[in-house]
Image (cartoon, one colour):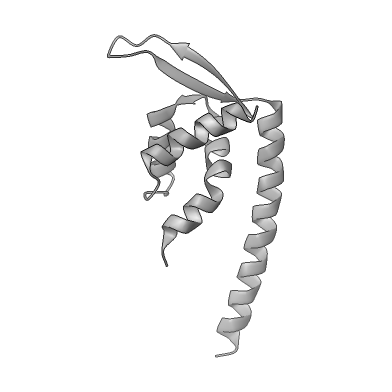
Length: 110
């Protein structure tokens, strides 16, 4: 199954979940998503999602100087972002349970 479309559908939730566990800058969030198993996630998609979630009021940001290059913009989750993550998590769990039931029924009818 092509995972690219699945990742697009859950990228907001995945980014919120990663940032909820620990603040992070763009590439750090990409790296953590890939380490969690979302290998197909694109850098540009994550950077765009971080900006969009920030502009929507779900994330805060702050700049940290870096001795290895340019300053890094870190993102952290706020109350609105936690609420969004909670709602999206409930939706995902419900959807996932429905799909699991459908697959179990289909596999049982073979």
